[in-house]
Image 1 (cartoon, rainbow, N blue to C red):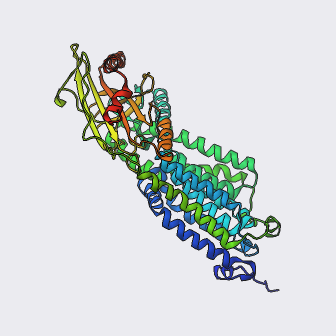
Image 2 (tube, rainbow, N blue to C red):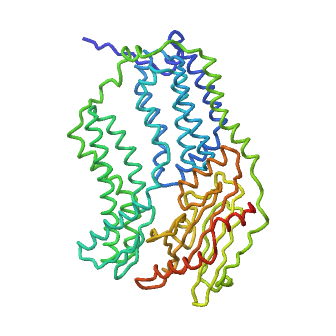
Image 3 (cartoon, rainbow, N blue to C red):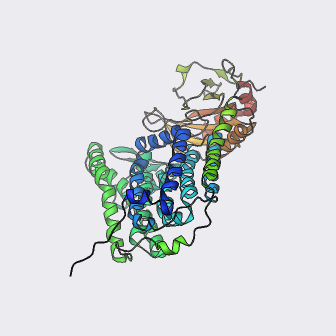
Length: 520
């Protein structure tokens, strides 16, 4: 008895099915995709740059191919569906366009990157309709993992990793001490850097575990348990990784630990974690790889009446063009800054030459002006005042953002973030930074934008959004005051008192910020 081969439609067969509307729908989708690429090519290029230049998101490079593979696996069922223009898909497209506008206005790249994904999803839903959308529900959802989000948790994960490592070191009998994210042993001094926080592991594991849960499980409970277990296992494993590196350094040398970290952990650690999770989950897989992904007959009934194809296309084009037009109009309202900021006179304090104090400078890429002025008083206390000015904010020149602030990102400056401050004045952000020779400084950061003084990054973004959306004055400033922390248990308290006395003598921070911007 001879087996009869099952005919599986290829891409040519799918595209040319005029009777089911595939050709017309794909032509409209292609034209809208071309407009989308033309309008947002700069943001798309920036998104790809994040994938290629940021280690935590390097796995995102493979996600478009994975999504295409999942769509290809569903091609037989898709050929049995009738794509239809869907007006409700424009709602999701509009959400994406509005998210892009908010991201542009607030200077939040995350919003713009998320908007790119949402708009792409909206284009697919608008052009192909609800039946195809339901058939491609998971591939469409999985596109969210292309958004570079998650590194905002790095400071918290750095501290968590350091605490896990120090407790394991104590259990192993290693005499070690911890200060924020710094761990010291008799023969080494270690910093749990951003790359060691495990953020990249968690982000990649979330994408991988979600894909495995979809492919291998039918039960939503098992899917949730698998994903949750994978993330917890990854977090714990990273703490063991940090512990292992320090333990190796303690029993051999720091150089040996570095080699092990880059060769063993850098290449094999994440692969071993993945294999362990697959092995643990294998006995609980409840989905056969031969099961169909969806029932075309049931999904086709979800389709509504056919939308007006070219009218829908025009509406989609207007939705995508609108935020770009608004941003172009707002850019013309930016006002220039004065030539330079004037160093304020502070009663009881006198200006010092730069060489009189350990040199420190905050890191603000794209700032239109940055001045660091050292001051001293009669008690030999030193305080640095930094004034940072922006005529307007845009991509690459933002008041708050990744790497912007008191210390530069890893590898880009002498000073690095060490820990949050024990306390800070109202409207300020307090943090401790560490220099190349172990010296530490206490820094308070104040931000002024839209007439508001704050130390919260979220509030800065909100006020920036308001002034750009409403066409108000876009000038902004950061005022930072810093003092060295002396050795001993009361070092931070002494630095905090010096800064408190200096700020009292300086007067209202908002007045200094406005004068530096020539607002009044």
